Every structure is written in C-alpha cells, then in structure tokens.
Image: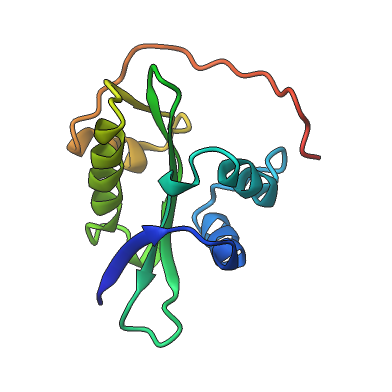
Length: 145
C-alpha cells in the first residue's frame, strides 16, 4: 500500500472525522468539525493527511495537526487507521511535522497523550520523546457543546 502525505483540504473533513472517531480521539466536549475549522484559520499548512494512492478513491488513512506558537510546537489529533497502526505511517507523520516545525525555527515539540494510553506513549518514546514531568491543565474558553 502506497501513502502520500499532503495538506488537508475541506473535502477531507468527513473522512478525517470518521478516522478520528475510529481511533477514539473524539470526545463529547470537542466538536471535531469545529476543531478542523479552527485549525484551518491558523497554520492550515500544518494540517496533514495521508491518502492511500493505491485506492481509486485515494482514501484518507491518517491525519494530524501541528502548530507553532513562537515558543513551542504542538501535535494534535494524530491518527492512523487502526489496521495500519504499526506500519510506519505515524512515524512518517512525525518526521514530517518535525521537519516542518524545524523549518519554522521551532526549538521544541510537545504533545499530549491521554493518561493510560500506554501503546501511544510507547510509540512516541520509540521516536525519542520523553515525559517532561509536567501536569497539563486546561480551561475551556469557548464551549463546543
């Protein structure tokens, strides 16, 4: 199976939402369509999808968002279709995000993984990411639901 990483287009929306749902990334308090619209307003070139080029429909099989605020880079909503997890596609996304963020002058990349998701933590550790021994706090400013 051949995959190509490319920038997200609005036509990818429903495929990406379905992928995120299949990967368990969607939560009731986050409207994924609103999150997509928000990302398209800030650094849309850092919203990537992977498509299956062997498939006539060029199905979306992976997606992820990155951003750089001038201090730190972030990766959010990185998902690979469950049957392709372990194929190297997630690694390809992270290599590309690191390349793009480095080109922007980003000195450090952060990401968050839900507590208890040991498989995903192991994936990022295999790429050289380490626990920063920080606590992530959040406050919703604009409710989605």
